[in-house]
Image (cartoon, rainbow, N blue to C red; front, side, top):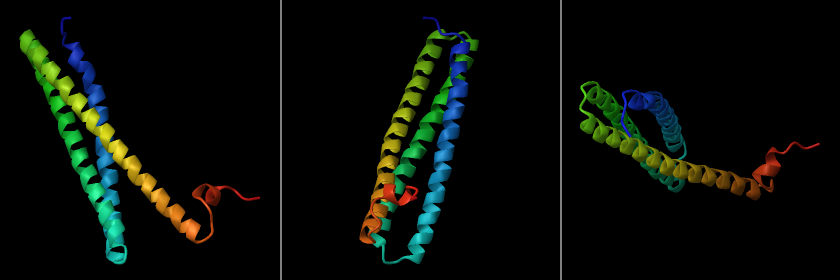
Length: 149
């Protein structure tokens, strides 16, 4: 298969949308951390829960940073590939395009792992709320939010 100039160009829109999604995740994470910081300052009695959340957020923040780094590398290698194709360095362009695809694959794999961690953290929050409701005799969250006649 011969690599054409339009092939890496097709990745531009995909990679930029991916980077936008990563940036949105980063901004959401920043808001979570700021809120957690306020909670920490207000409630000094919940150190164990807050420390666990802080460790989780630190790990996720590191992963999001790596997702962004590999996404940017993929984008940069795409641009270099297009330049090499324009200069008719076909073999080099093929290798650089392969590197771009590899960086994109790594970025997506890290994103998948971060989603798993995020989902687990949200489930822990739900379990914590259910425990509070059970202690108050309110049942589960599903019963709490179900409309009563």
